[in-house]
Figure 1: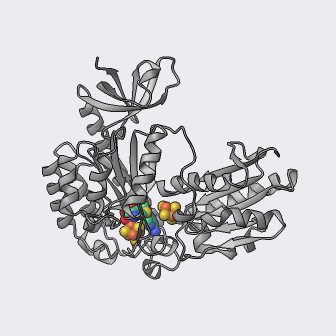
Figure 2 (figure 1 turned 180 degrees about the vertical axis):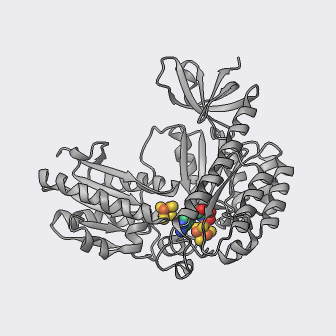
Figure 3 (figure 1 turned 90 degrees about the vertical axis):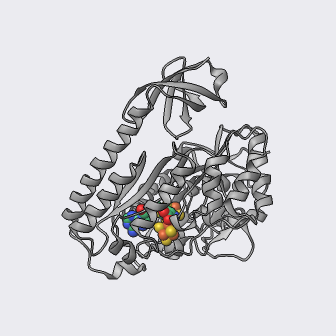
Length: 436
Ligand code: SAH
Ligand code: SF4
Ligand code: F3S
């Protein structure tokens, strides 16, 4: 047998790309590729890209610029671009960066083995179709027999919401759900390989309709799997939080008390211009209902500052919403103009205004995050231990609320959920002791 070829994959963007990178690596396994974390050793480099903000897309081109040197050292090296930039820009990527041999969109990566054979023959390969055949039908079962304790599992892709700022409906296409039986099958494979926690992924995961009772129905079926200890899901849209899902947060023990629920803005005028189809008030009511079902639930959100037309009063409304909700975690961004989206046509706010608002927003969000972390001290929480820490005898895991937790523990806690009493809160992690 010939020596295995080496594949280096670099992943940008959201968790869905993390999952896709793993599936692409597995797909190319059939062509004799094994993963490497050293680009200079690779026979193929795949950049799995993100198009969500201008900076994310531009990063890809600067990375491709650096790839030229690697190709000079190893002329047989093949370079591929996958993910949302591939979908959005297609053949333009090869024009702008002639080092690129292969461009594959997120719905076509089951065709990577055939594309690899084409590029090995010296051709360029491009596939950004939204094919009729489902990539998950073609991709073989998950081949790895040993896995890390926490895994992602994509159950839903695409988006029909068309928020005025967002490229996802264009790069990922219309909303599609995987049938529940396939998801359950994949989940069992993951658990058999050592997985204790599954995070269900989708651009709008709570719009999932591959189960007759929606995402809640899928969660309840997953909860039946022995050995699966924890279930999470992300990202949800406020308008798709149905009663059954809210109820599951109160009643399904394996569903973790953490919810990422992007709101984007606290101003109704801006929410309308964003085409979010919810108001600040309806979001706050929803939060109340979710917290009534699960009082200790940790909320996280996404915010955009400086959306076209945002006034100081609109921005203040966002700060007010944050003060009312108290988020344990949040991601915030300056608005970035995305060609082809409706908001790109509108006059843009000055950069200095956006920079100032982002700083003020982040100051408030960081204060809340630290308060929530400080409040964990003295509490006993479940921690799924995932890996050894850098200090001997120390293990690192994630709490029920998704905080990183360090504790002195024997290595046999790896892969287990153990009770930990939190003793210290740092800026990015908590420290604790195992409860015997
Ligand atoms: N499907 C998810 C997340 C999509 S992208 C949802 O509906 O919430 C993740 C986050 O990126 C978004 O929630 C939004 O806050 C941010 N984002 C998307 N487009 C953006 C843009 N053009 N400029 C700045 N931030 C953006
Ligand atoms: Fe983008 Fe809006 Fe869809 Fe989220 S819901 S992916 S922000 S269009
Ligand atoms: Fe980026 Fe595509 Fe995810 S644009 S955020 S990688 S869906």
